[in-house]
Length: 101
Image (cartoon, rainbow, N blue to C red):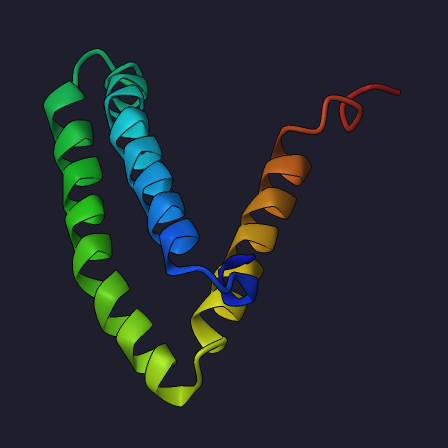
């Protein structure tokens, strides 16, 4: 959400490298977590994860380009909204105090 406020191209490119490296480090962890979901359907679960990852890699640039043509800040606003929604889902689903009475 901070990209629109950076004035230096070098800073933007360096942060893109950091995000790409983070994505590369997360992928093996996601695959191992998905493989632990079911001992009998491991291949099916990994293939579903791989398919959804591929769909995201196709739709992401297309939707991002579409948003950029609408306005430079739109992709960042939409990404920020998606992140906030994801954090709210995580907080709601993983709230340790929800089950205690």
